[in-house]
Amino acid sequence: MAYSDKQLISDYLAGDEKSFTVLVKDYLKPVFSFVCRYVNNEQEAEDITQEVFVKVWKNLKRFDPSKNFKTWIFTIAKNTALDYFKKKKTINFSVFENEAGENLLWETLVDPKPLSDEILMQANLTETMNMVIKHLTKKYQIVLFLYYYKNFTFKEISITLGESVNTVKSRHRRALLLLKKILPVKL
Image 1 (cartoon, rainbow, N blue to C red):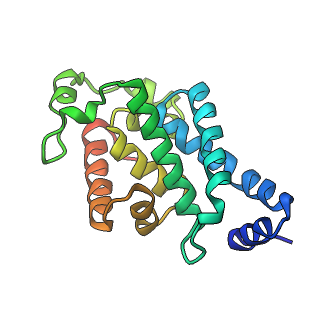
Image 2 (cartoon, one colour):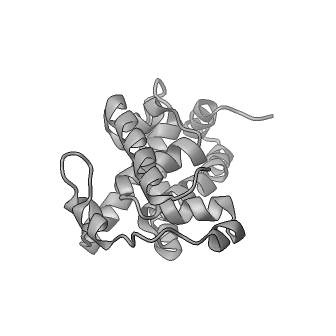
C-alpha cells in the first residue's frame, strides 16, 4: 500500500525509520536526474544528491506539512546545486544575458549552418532535444526539464526555484522560442 509523502514524514518523525527509506527510494532518481541536469556531471551530481538527502534528513522535522514535499525537496536540490556552483566559481553563460534573455556570447558562437538531414534522421528525438536544450542557459534548461521531464506545474516550478509563476512561464516561453531558433526542423 502506497503512502503519501506527508504520511511517510509523519511516520518517520514518530519513530518509523523505514518511512524515510521509502521517501529516499521515491525521490532518489528524480532528484539525481534534476541535479545531474543542473551540473552536467554525473559524478558530481551523485555527491550533491547525497548532500541533498542528508539535508532533508537533518531538516525533516522543520518541513511544513501544509506545503508540497516534492517542491520542498527539489528546492533543497536546487539550492545545493547552486552552492556547488558557488564553490566551483565557474562562469555561467547566463552572465552574458541581457534583460531580454538574449545571450550575446552564445549568439556569436552559434554555427549558423543547420544540421544535415542525415544526422537528424539518425538521431533519436529525445537525444536531439537533449542536445539542443544543452545550448540553453541553466535557467531555461531547468524550467523545461521540470515541466516536461518531471511533470511539474508552473506553480511547483515557481516554488522550487523561488521565482514568481509569471517569471517561470516567461522563461518557459522564451526557452521554446530559443529552441525554435536553434532547431532547424519542426518536431
